[in-house]
Image 1 (cartoon, chains in turn purple, red):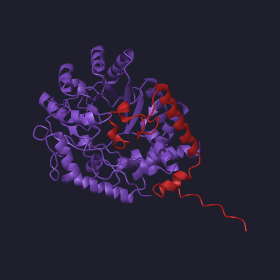
Image 2 (cartoon, one colour):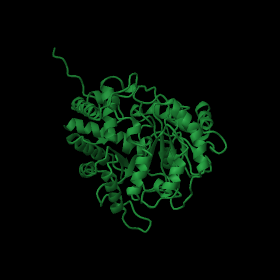
Image 3 (cartoon, chains in turn blue, yellow):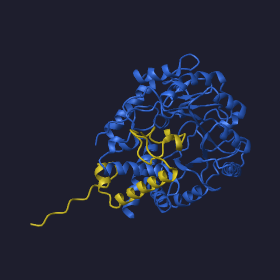
Length: 369
Length: 77
Protein backbone atom coordinates (compact mmCIF):
# COMPACT_ATOMS: atom_id res chain seq x y z
CA UNK A 1 0.00 0.00 0.00
CA UNK A 2 1.08 3.60 -0.42
CA UNK A 3 2.06 5.68 2.60
CA UNK A 4 1.80 9.45 2.68
CA UNK A 5 3.91 10.33 5.74
CA UNK A 6 7.54 11.41 5.99
CA UNK A 7 7.47 13.73 2.97
CA UNK A 8 10.18 16.33 3.26
CA UNK A 9 11.56 18.03 6.34
CA UNK A 10 9.57 19.94 8.99
CA UNK A 11 10.77 23.50 9.56
CA UNK A 12 10.39 23.16 13.33
CA UNK A 13 11.69 20.15 15.28
CA UNK A 14 10.17 18.70 18.42
CA UNK A 15 13.53 18.31 20.12
CA UNK A 16 17.17 19.26 19.78
CA UNK A 17 20.25 17.29 20.78
CA UNK A 18 23.09 19.07 22.55
CA UNK A 19 26.68 17.83 22.84
CA UNK A 20 28.03 19.40 26.05
CA UNK A 21 31.32 17.55 25.64
CA UNK A 22 32.83 15.07 23.22
CA UNK A 23 34.44 13.21 26.14
CA UNK A 24 33.25 9.88 27.43
CA UNK A 25 34.74 8.20 30.50
CA UNK A 26 34.00 4.81 28.92
CA UNK A 27 35.46 3.17 25.83
CA UNK A 28 32.75 0.72 24.83
CA UNK A 29 33.69 -1.81 22.19
CA UNK A 30 30.86 -0.84 19.83
CA UNK A 31 30.91 2.95 20.30
CA UNK A 32 30.52 5.03 17.12
CA UNK A 33 31.76 8.35 18.53
CA UNK A 34 34.94 9.61 16.88
CA UNK A 35 36.26 12.04 19.50
CA UNK A 36 35.23 10.36 22.75
CA UNK A 37 38.76 10.49 24.18
CA UNK A 38 38.95 14.28 23.70
CA UNK A 39 37.37 16.78 26.06
CA UNK A 40 36.00 19.38 23.67
CA UNK A 41 33.47 21.31 25.71
CA UNK A 42 30.53 23.35 24.54
CA UNK A 43 30.92 27.06 25.42
CA UNK A 44 27.92 28.70 27.09
CA UNK A 45 27.71 31.06 24.10
CA UNK A 46 26.62 28.09 21.96
CA UNK A 47 23.85 27.17 24.40
CA UNK A 48 22.69 30.80 24.49
CA UNK A 49 22.53 30.93 20.70
CA UNK A 50 20.53 27.68 20.57
CA UNK A 51 18.19 28.85 23.32
CA UNK A 52 17.31 32.01 21.38
CA UNK A 53 15.52 29.82 18.84
CA UNK A 54 14.50 26.91 21.06
CA UNK A 55 12.74 29.04 23.65
CA UNK A 56 10.53 30.43 20.88
CA UNK A 57 9.82 26.96 19.50
CA UNK A 58 9.04 25.69 23.00
CA UNK A 59 6.67 28.59 23.61
CA UNK A 60 4.66 27.54 20.57
CA UNK A 61 4.60 23.80 21.36
CA UNK A 62 2.85 21.69 23.96
CA UNK A 63 6.18 20.09 24.80
CA UNK A 64 9.71 20.61 23.60
CA UNK A 65 12.75 18.57 24.62
CA UNK A 66 16.40 19.43 24.90
CA UNK A 67 18.41 16.21 24.91
CA UNK A 68 21.91 16.29 26.37
CA UNK A 69 23.99 13.64 24.71
CA UNK A 70 27.70 13.17 24.35
CA UNK A 71 30.23 11.92 24.72
CA UNK A 72 29.05 11.35 28.25
CA UNK A 73 27.08 14.45 29.30
CA UNK A 74 27.88 13.99 32.98
CA UNK A 75 31.59 14.15 32.13
CA UNK A 76 31.01 17.87 31.55
CA UNK A 77 30.41 18.25 35.28
CA UNK A 78 27.44 19.74 37.12
CA UNK A 79 28.66 23.33 37.01
CA UNK A 80 29.19 23.30 33.24
CA UNK A 81 26.00 21.39 32.48
CA UNK A 82 23.99 23.71 34.71
CA UNK A 83 25.47 26.75 32.96
CA UNK A 84 24.56 25.26 29.56
CA UNK A 85 21.00 24.54 30.68
CA UNK A 86 20.47 27.97 32.20
CA UNK A 87 19.55 29.88 29.00
CA UNK A 88 16.67 27.53 28.19
CA UNK A 89 13.11 28.11 29.35
CA UNK A 90 9.87 26.19 28.84
CA UNK A 91 11.68 23.01 27.77
CA UNK A 92 12.05 19.49 29.15
CA UNK A 93 15.64 18.45 29.71
CA UNK A 94 16.74 14.89 28.96
CA UNK A 95 20.11 13.30 29.58
CA UNK A 96 21.32 10.12 27.92
CA UNK A 97 24.02 8.77 30.22
CA UNK A 98 26.16 5.70 30.79
CA UNK A 99 25.14 5.99 34.48
CA UNK A 100 28.64 5.35 35.82
CA UNK A 101 29.02 8.83 37.32
CA UNK A 102 25.59 9.06 38.94
CA UNK A 103 25.70 9.63 42.68
CA UNK A 104 23.58 11.55 45.18
CA UNK A 105 24.98 14.89 44.04
CA UNK A 106 23.96 14.14 40.46
CA UNK A 107 20.54 12.99 41.70
CA UNK A 108 20.16 16.39 43.40
CA UNK A 109 21.01 18.01 40.07
CA UNK A 110 18.49 15.88 38.16
CA UNK A 111 15.74 16.74 40.62
CA UNK A 112 16.61 20.44 40.66
CA UNK A 113 16.52 20.63 36.84
CA UNK A 114 13.65 18.16 36.40
CA UNK A 115 15.78 16.04 34.09
CA UNK A 116 14.45 12.93 32.33
CA UNK A 117 17.04 10.16 32.43
CA UNK A 118 17.88 7.57 29.82
CA UNK A 119 20.75 5.23 30.70
CA UNK A 120 22.64 2.46 28.99
CA UNK A 121 23.14 -1.10 30.22
CA UNK A 122 23.21 -4.21 28.06
CA UNK A 123 21.91 -6.78 30.52
CA UNK A 124 23.55 -8.80 33.28
CA UNK A 125 27.32 -8.61 33.79
CA UNK A 126 28.18 -11.03 30.96
CA UNK A 127 26.09 -9.13 28.39
CA UNK A 128 27.37 -5.73 29.58
CA UNK A 129 31.02 -6.75 29.16
CA UNK A 130 31.34 -4.55 26.06
CA UNK A 131 30.88 -1.44 28.19
CA UNK A 132 34.37 -0.79 29.56
CA UNK A 133 36.24 1.87 31.48
CA UNK A 134 39.07 3.81 29.86
CA UNK A 135 41.54 1.66 31.82
CA UNK A 136 39.96 -1.50 30.41
CA UNK A 137 37.95 -2.69 33.41
CA UNK A 138 34.28 -3.56 33.33
CA UNK A 139 31.88 -0.67 33.79
CA UNK A 140 29.11 -2.95 35.06
CA UNK A 141 29.50 -2.37 38.81
CA UNK A 142 29.56 1.41 38.36
CA UNK A 143 26.47 1.31 36.13
CA UNK A 144 24.57 -0.74 38.69
CA UNK A 145 25.68 1.65 41.45
CA UNK A 146 24.38 4.57 39.40
CA UNK A 147 21.04 2.86 38.92
CA UNK A 148 20.88 2.13 42.65
CA UNK A 149 21.40 5.84 43.37
CA UNK A 150 18.51 6.76 41.06
CA UNK A 151 16.25 4.18 42.69
CA UNK A 152 17.14 5.38 46.21
CA UNK A 153 15.97 8.83 45.17
CA UNK A 154 12.90 7.55 43.28
CA UNK A 155 14.11 9.10 40.03
CA UNK A 156 12.54 7.44 36.99
CA UNK A 157 14.76 6.28 34.16
CA UNK A 158 14.57 4.60 30.79
CA UNK A 159 17.05 1.96 29.64
CA UNK A 160 18.76 1.67 26.27
CA UNK A 161 20.33 -1.72 25.75
CA UNK A 162 22.64 -2.77 22.95
CA UNK A 163 22.50 -6.35 21.69
CA UNK A 164 25.53 -7.34 19.62
CA UNK A 165 24.66 -10.93 18.73
CA UNK A 166 20.88 -11.29 18.49
CA UNK A 167 19.62 -14.85 18.41
CA UNK A 168 17.46 -17.33 20.28
CA UNK A 169 17.90 -17.78 24.02
CA UNK A 170 18.93 -14.18 24.77
CA UNK A 171 15.80 -12.05 24.84
CA UNK A 172 13.82 -13.66 27.66
CA UNK A 173 16.56 -13.51 30.32
CA UNK A 174 17.57 -10.06 29.06
CA UNK A 175 14.04 -8.72 29.48
CA UNK A 176 13.69 -10.30 32.91
CA UNK A 177 16.96 -8.72 34.06
CA UNK A 178 16.27 -5.27 32.66
CA UNK A 179 12.67 -5.18 33.91
CA UNK A 180 14.00 -6.06 37.36
CA UNK A 181 16.07 -2.86 37.38
CA UNK A 182 12.84 -0.88 37.46
CA UNK A 183 12.92 1.28 34.31
CA UNK A 184 9.88 2.93 32.81
CA UNK A 185 10.83 1.91 29.27
CA UNK A 186 13.34 -0.38 27.60
CA UNK A 187 14.72 0.37 24.15
CA UNK A 188 16.62 -2.39 22.38
CA UNK A 189 19.28 -1.33 19.88
CA UNK A 190 20.86 -4.07 17.85
CA UNK A 191 24.49 -3.04 17.37
CA UNK A 192 24.96 -0.93 14.25
CA UNK A 193 27.94 -0.61 11.97
CA UNK A 194 28.42 3.13 12.00
CA UNK A 195 30.86 5.84 12.87
CA UNK A 196 34.16 4.44 14.08
CA UNK A 197 32.55 1.09 14.88
CA UNK A 198 33.34 -1.10 11.90
CA UNK A 199 32.16 -4.39 13.44
CA UNK A 200 29.79 -6.02 11.00
CA UNK A 201 26.07 -6.05 11.74
CA UNK A 202 25.37 -8.80 9.19
CA UNK A 203 23.28 -11.45 10.93
CA UNK A 204 21.25 -14.47 9.93
CA UNK A 205 17.68 -13.18 9.55
CA UNK A 206 16.18 -16.30 11.13
CA UNK A 207 18.21 -15.82 14.30
CA UNK A 208 17.30 -12.15 14.52
CA UNK A 209 13.61 -12.92 14.04
CA UNK A 210 13.87 -15.53 16.79
CA UNK A 211 15.35 -12.88 19.09
CA UNK A 212 12.48 -10.45 18.49
CA UNK A 213 9.88 -13.21 18.73
CA UNK A 214 11.28 -14.32 22.08
CA UNK A 215 11.33 -10.73 23.32
CA UNK A 216 7.68 -10.36 22.33
CA UNK A 217 6.80 -13.53 24.23
CA UNK A 218 8.72 -12.37 27.31
CA UNK A 219 7.02 -8.97 27.28
CA UNK A 220 3.62 -10.57 26.76
CA UNK A 221 4.06 -12.82 29.78
CA UNK A 222 4.90 -9.84 31.96
CA UNK A 223 4.17 -6.47 30.29
CA UNK A 224 4.99 -4.37 33.35
CA UNK A 225 7.69 -2.46 31.46
CA UNK A 226 7.26 -0.78 28.11
CA UNK A 227 9.45 -2.31 25.40
CA UNK A 228 9.81 0.31 22.71
CA UNK A 229 10.40 -1.92 19.68
CA UNK A 230 7.82 -4.60 20.45
CA UNK A 231 5.12 -2.10 21.33
CA UNK A 232 5.79 0.04 18.28
CA UNK A 233 5.47 -3.06 16.09
CA UNK A 234 2.18 -3.92 17.78
CA UNK A 235 0.97 -0.39 17.37
CA UNK A 236 1.70 -0.61 13.63
CA UNK A 237 0.12 -4.08 13.35
CA UNK A 238 -2.97 -2.84 15.18
CA UNK A 239 -3.22 0.13 12.83
CA UNK A 240 -3.02 -2.22 9.83
CA UNK A 241 -5.81 -4.37 11.27
CA UNK A 242 -7.89 -1.23 11.84
CA UNK A 243 -7.21 0.10 8.32
CA UNK A 244 -5.38 3.11 9.79
CA UNK A 245 -1.78 2.27 8.96
CA UNK A 246 -1.25 5.44 6.94
CA UNK A 247 -2.06 7.60 9.96
CA UNK A 248 0.93 6.46 11.95
CA UNK A 249 3.99 8.13 10.49
CA UNK A 250 4.63 11.83 11.02
CA UNK A 251 3.68 13.89 7.98
CA UNK A 252 7.23 15.23 7.68
CA UNK A 253 10.63 14.21 9.00
CA UNK A 254 11.55 15.79 12.28
CA UNK A 255 14.84 17.56 11.43
CA UNK A 256 16.32 16.61 14.86
CA UNK A 257 19.08 19.23 14.99
CA UNK A 258 22.18 18.02 16.78
CA UNK A 259 24.25 20.92 18.08
CA UNK A 260 27.89 19.91 18.17
CA UNK A 261 30.12 21.17 20.99
CA UNK A 262 31.37 24.01 18.75
CA UNK A 263 27.94 25.18 17.56
CA UNK A 264 27.80 23.40 14.20
CA UNK A 265 24.47 21.81 13.39
CA UNK A 266 23.93 18.33 11.98
CA UNK A 267 20.37 17.48 10.97
CA UNK A 268 18.55 14.14 11.03
CA UNK A 269 21.29 11.81 12.28
CA UNK A 270 23.35 12.72 15.35
CA UNK A 271 25.66 9.83 14.49
CA UNK A 272 27.09 11.91 11.62
CA UNK A 273 28.36 14.64 13.97
CA UNK A 274 32.13 14.86 14.04
CA UNK A 275 32.69 13.04 10.73
CA UNK A 276 33.87 14.41 7.40
CA UNK A 277 33.69 13.02 3.91
CA UNK A 278 35.34 14.06 0.67
CA UNK A 279 31.94 14.02 -1.02
CA UNK A 280 29.72 15.46 1.72
CA UNK A 281 32.07 17.62 3.79
CA UNK A 282 31.35 17.71 7.52
CA UNK A 283 27.60 16.96 7.18
CA UNK A 284 26.75 20.24 8.92
CA UNK A 285 24.11 22.74 7.77
CA UNK A 286 25.59 25.77 9.50
CA UNK A 287 26.67 27.04 12.91
CA UNK A 288 24.50 28.68 15.53
CA UNK A 289 27.39 31.09 16.14
CA UNK A 290 26.83 32.52 12.64
CA UNK A 291 23.16 31.91 11.86
CA UNK A 292 20.11 31.35 14.00
CA UNK A 293 19.06 27.72 14.48
CA UNK A 294 15.62 28.62 13.14
CA UNK A 295 17.16 29.86 9.88
CA UNK A 296 19.45 26.85 9.56
CA UNK A 297 16.59 24.37 9.90
CA UNK A 298 14.11 26.36 7.79
CA UNK A 299 16.60 26.70 4.93
CA UNK A 300 16.98 22.91 4.65
CA UNK A 301 13.23 22.39 5.06
CA UNK A 302 12.39 24.83 2.26
CA UNK A 303 15.20 23.91 -0.13
CA UNK A 304 17.21 20.86 0.96
CA UNK A 305 20.80 20.79 -0.22
CA UNK A 306 23.78 18.43 -0.13
CA UNK A 307 23.42 15.12 1.63
CA UNK A 308 20.06 16.14 3.15
CA UNK A 309 18.54 16.42 -0.34
CA UNK A 310 20.11 13.11 -1.32
CA UNK A 311 18.71 11.51 1.83
CA UNK A 312 15.21 12.76 1.05
CA UNK A 313 15.55 11.19 -2.41
CA UNK A 314 16.50 7.97 -0.64
CA UNK A 315 13.39 8.17 1.53
CA UNK A 316 11.28 8.43 -1.61
CA UNK A 317 13.09 5.40 -3.02
CA UNK A 318 12.21 3.52 0.19
CA UNK A 319 8.59 4.61 -0.13
CA UNK A 320 8.46 3.33 -3.73
CA UNK A 321 10.20 0.03 -3.13
CA UNK A 322 9.74 -1.24 0.42
CA UNK A 323 6.67 -2.90 1.93
CA UNK A 324 7.85 -1.90 5.38
CA UNK A 325 7.92 1.85 4.73
CA UNK A 326 4.77 2.50 6.77
CA UNK A 327 6.45 0.85 9.73
CA UNK A 328 9.84 2.54 9.60
CA UNK A 329 9.50 5.72 7.51
CA UNK A 330 12.69 5.07 5.56
CA UNK A 331 16.19 3.87 6.35
CA UNK A 332 18.08 6.17 8.70
CA UNK A 333 20.63 8.54 7.20
CA UNK A 334 23.60 7.33 9.24
CA UNK A 335 22.93 3.68 8.42
CA UNK A 336 22.78 4.46 4.72
CA UNK A 337 26.03 6.41 4.82
CA UNK A 338 28.08 4.16 7.07
CA UNK A 339 26.89 0.92 5.45
CA UNK A 340 26.63 2.02 1.84
CA UNK A 341 28.58 5.26 1.47
CA UNK A 342 25.69 7.38 0.23
CA UNK A 343 22.22 8.53 1.19
CA UNK A 344 19.98 7.76 -1.79
CA UNK A 345 20.11 4.01 -1.26
CA UNK A 346 17.29 2.00 0.29
CA UNK A 347 17.40 -1.07 2.51
CA UNK A 348 20.28 -1.34 4.99
CA UNK A 349 21.39 -4.16 7.26
CA UNK A 350 20.04 -2.07 10.12
CA UNK A 351 16.65 -2.06 8.34
CA UNK A 352 16.76 -5.83 8.09
CA UNK A 353 17.86 -6.39 11.70
CA UNK A 354 15.83 -3.81 13.57
CA UNK A 355 12.78 -3.12 11.42
CA UNK A 356 12.02 -6.03 9.09
CA UNK A 357 13.09 -8.87 11.38
CA UNK A 358 11.48 -7.08 14.32
CA UNK A 359 8.08 -6.92 12.66
CA UNK A 360 8.41 -10.44 11.29
CA UNK A 361 9.49 -11.72 14.71
CA UNK A 362 6.42 -10.21 16.34
CA UNK A 363 4.25 -11.85 13.66
CA UNK A 364 6.09 -15.15 14.21
CA UNK A 365 5.20 -14.95 17.89
CA UNK A 366 1.56 -14.24 17.10
CA UNK A 367 1.31 -17.24 14.77
CA UNK A 368 2.95 -19.53 17.32
CA UNK A 369 0.80 -18.40 20.21
CA UNK B 1 -19.92 -27.10 -6.19
CA UNK B 2 -18.11 -26.57 -2.89
CA UNK B 3 -16.43 -23.23 -2.33
CA UNK B 4 -12.68 -23.29 -2.44
CA UNK B 5 -10.97 -21.95 0.67
CA UNK B 6 -9.20 -18.62 0.23
CA UNK B 7 -5.53 -19.18 -0.47
CA UNK B 8 -3.35 -18.29 2.49
CA UNK B 9 -1.42 -15.04 2.12
CA UNK B 10 2.15 -15.52 0.96
CA UNK B 11 4.18 -15.33 4.15
CA UNK B 12 7.41 -14.36 2.41
CA UNK B 13 8.86 -11.23 4.03
CA UNK B 14 8.37 -8.20 1.80
CA UNK B 15 5.44 -9.69 -0.10
CA UNK B 16 2.23 -7.69 0.42
CA UNK B 17 2.93 -6.98 4.05
CA UNK B 18 -0.50 -5.54 4.81
CA UNK B 19 -2.24 -8.67 3.51
CA UNK B 20 0.13 -10.87 5.49
CA UNK B 21 -0.46 -8.91 8.68
CA UNK B 22 -4.22 -9.11 8.22
CA UNK B 23 -3.92 -12.87 7.67
CA UNK B 24 -1.68 -13.48 10.68
CA UNK B 25 -3.41 -15.88 13.03
CA UNK B 26 -3.13 -14.88 16.65
CA UNK B 27 -2.31 -11.24 15.93
CA UNK B 28 -5.67 -9.68 16.81
CA UNK B 29 -5.70 -11.03 20.39
CA UNK B 30 -2.06 -10.00 20.83
CA UNK B 31 -2.84 -6.44 19.70
CA UNK B 32 -5.89 -6.38 21.96
CA UNK B 33 -3.70 -7.38 24.92
CA UNK B 34 -1.25 -4.61 24.07
CA UNK B 35 -4.04 -2.03 23.86
CA UNK B 36 -5.34 -3.13 27.27
CA UNK B 37 -1.82 -2.78 28.66
CA UNK B 38 -1.57 0.77 27.30
CA UNK B 39 -4.95 1.71 28.76
CA UNK B 40 -4.01 0.19 32.13
CA UNK B 41 -0.75 2.11 32.16
CA UNK B 42 -2.49 5.36 31.33
CA UNK B 43 -5.10 4.76 34.00
CA UNK B 44 -2.39 4.00 36.56
CA UNK B 45 -0.65 7.24 35.65
CA UNK B 46 -3.91 9.21 35.65
CA UNK B 47 -3.34 10.21 32.00
CA UNK B 48 -6.02 11.37 29.63
CA UNK B 49 -5.25 12.33 26.03
CA UNK B 50 -5.71 16.04 25.47
CA UNK B 51 -8.76 17.10 23.50
CA UNK B 52 -7.86 17.26 19.84
CA UNK B 53 -4.56 15.53 20.53
CA UNK B 54 -3.15 13.35 17.78
CA UNK B 55 -1.55 11.10 20.37
CA UNK B 56 -2.91 7.61 20.49
CA UNK B 57 -4.72 7.30 23.82
CA UNK B 58 -2.45 5.70 26.36
CA UNK B 59 0.55 5.71 24.08
CA UNK B 60 3.40 7.17 26.04
CA UNK B 61 4.41 10.55 24.69
CA UNK B 62 7.92 10.69 23.31
CA UNK B 63 8.91 13.22 25.87
CA UNK B 64 8.04 10.89 28.71
CA UNK B 65 9.90 7.99 27.34
CA UNK B 66 13.08 8.33 25.43
CA UNK B 67 15.46 11.08 24.62
CA UNK B 68 16.78 8.82 21.88
CA UNK B 69 13.58 8.10 20.04
CA UNK B 70 15.21 9.16 16.78
CA UNK B 71 16.56 5.64 16.83
CA UNK B 72 13.12 4.43 15.96
CA UNK B 73 10.65 6.21 13.75
CA UNK B 74 11.87 9.73 13.99
CA UNK B 75 8.91 10.72 16.15
CA UNK B 76 5.47 9.20 16.16
CA UNK B 77 2.59 11.59 16.15
